Each structure stands twice: as C-alpha cells, then as structure tokens.
Image 1: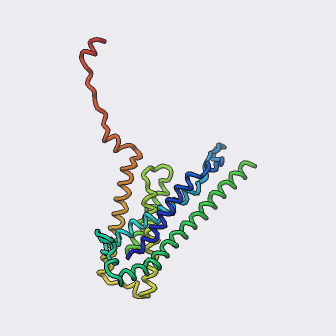
Image 2: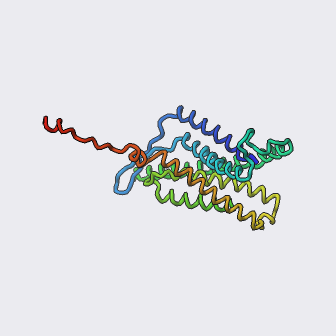
Length: 138
Length: 116
C-alpha cells in the first residue's frame, strides 16, 4: 500500500547525512600498490560518505521502481493525499500496519545488505593493503 | 514473477558493469542500484505474502502471473528509461553537447582576404 515510503524516508535521511559527512571528511587515505612490471600505483581508500551514498542509491532506486508498482496497482493516485488507502480510516489503518511491518523490514533488509557490502569492501581494501605491504618488504 | 524478472535484470546489469568496470562511462551503476534495491524490497514483499499464503504462494493463477510478468517487464523498461535519460543528461562522451553546439562555418570575407 505504501510500504516503500519507509525505506524512501531512510534513503533521504542517509543522503543528507552523507552530504554532511562529505563536507567534514578529511582527504581520503592514499596507498601505493605494486603493479605488474615493478611499478607502483597510488590508490585512494573509498571514503565513508561515498559508502553511505551506496545505501541511499540502493534504497532510492528500489523505491522508484516500487512506487511504479504501486501506481500500477492503483495504490498511488494523482490527487491529494496521493495514497488511495487514505480515503477511509479502515484502509488507512491497514496501510499503517503494512508500513510498520513490510516497510520497516524492507528498510532493515536493505541496510543489512549495505552492512554486508561494507564488510566485504573493507576486507578487500585491507587485503590489498596487506599484500602491498608484503610486496614492499620483499 | 516481478521479483524474478527484477533479479535477472539486476544480475545481468551487474555482470555487464563488472565486465566494463573502469572502461565504460555509461553509468551502469544506476541500473544495478535500482534493480538490486527493488529486488531486495520485493523479496520482503514475497516473504510476507508467503507467510500468509504458504504453499498457495507458489501456485498463482494464470491471470495473476501474466499481470505480474507484464509488470516486471514494465519495471525493467522504466529502469532502462531512467538510466538512458541519466546517461544523456550526464553526457560522458560529449555527444549530446556536440550535437547541440554544432560548429558554425564562418565564411571568409573577400575584403579581408584581399587586404592580406
């Protein structure tokens, strides 16, 4: 009914937080990685603000397509208050229940997926730096 | 069906993005985020529906399945439209800009040539 609004709100909050953090962030950490042929390549670690943007893109992207699905099913209408379920209290109560269950679970799942991405990306970065350090010692 | 079609779209887009990573300026990331985000959200929808319907969830009526397939394809089409519009607006190769700002051939004035 309007479950997608919950992750949409989280996406907007995260996008604003990412912008604020981006302004406060210092220069990203740079690392010299050895490449084939004995050369070195200077790379930058992905700043946290950029990683935070991944979450907002994931949620906003999903919400756009889910909003289309709701228009398809006639749950979003082109007149105020734009949600068909708001026309009577019984439907509105059902909508709020769905937002509290399905919507919150959607927000949690996308956040969990993002946390997984953070862990994997952090492991990849650490492994690359460790390998670079080992290569430098040899 | 909508979930399945979106997951396939997400996997295909991610594979194309990975293959062209670093080389392509086609902003494929936007497609990956959209399709993966929608897939995760529809997965939650599917789980709640499964909890309600149990085994009946896997035996949808033909009419519902057709409608869901049509919806899934429309969702993929919408995602592709959003992506192509974003590419044209960002214009990484400068193609649109070059088309809009065509170089104008300025005719050489005869007097100026004679003076030289």
